[in-house]
Length: 157
Image (cartoon, rainbow, N blue to C red):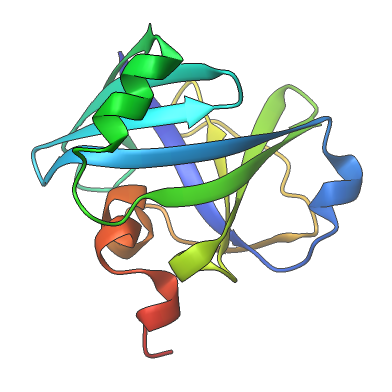
């Protein structure tokens, strides 16, 4: 139940040519406490509730528990989430033995594209595609829970 992942900004749309799948996602947060985040997500035709623990000091790992729920339940829960529901499309790009999940955000987070890769260990080596930009692993402002409160469009860049 420990998730190890790294996050990167995306510097071009070239990943779309390599994507094998794209799925619309709507998600909200019932709780965005630093020690635990509770997320409700509708991903395509499926829905989930997810609990994430606090990140490790390096931002690479944290507890994650997820359970599939009925889409109608997720729709009801989204109505009571904290303000700042997130809309995005998730693209999947397989590269060797890894899958990059690239999120293109809309609404108040329009213009932000983040790639994530899940790893088996913190030191696992993986190929970096040319569209991958700066690493933002552990940078809290890029967590979806924070993007719901402090959207990308309102940052002073």
